Image (cartoon, rainbow, N blue to C red; front, side):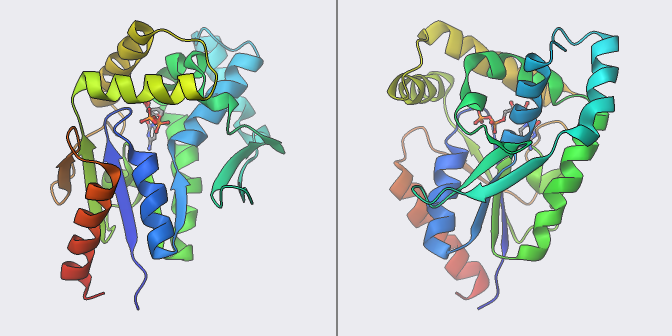
Length: 229
Ligand code: CDP
């Protein structure tokens, strides 16, 4: 059976990674969360006191890219890849609101995008790939076999992210999460380099009222009808 590339893009907290994980397990494909690379670089910038992103700090961060080693390794207990920065597992740290508050400013820097997109493209040879993010169907894999674009109402997205972070033990308040989601969407859709767009050949899924299983069933049906699986 031919292995395909599935690109999932969409607004913040639309459940892209939960869906991508479920779909990749179902198909026995590799899953890569492209946002984790921008988040890891943002974490590095925070730790190295390169925030606020003044011109000088941006230049320093760009100069340090060659020293930032990003890797994915399978986490045996979850079965999914965790992101490593210079050998340290950052899967939990990158979810913090502090990282979320700066990540879209880091992700709009063209030289950082170019560096990250090159790494992302290198996953293509693996075949059988699900990757989620903002520019996967438009820039990273414009020839992806299947492009999905997820959307959901603002409050539903904020509530989902709030519940997820509370479950993981973060002390956060709902309004901060809501504001972060709205401001990231604005930055991500308005930036000059690879803005978040709906690729013209993408299937748009508004999952406000869909469970994750509803979404999986819908996509599996779509794959079966399109690719003769
Ligand atoms: O999980 P969530 O949708 O909240 O975000 P994420 O996928 O972890 O991405 C965090 C941020 O990284 C986004 O808000 C974008 O600013 C940036 N990003 C990007 O520019 N391009 C991508 N392919 C993935 C993420």
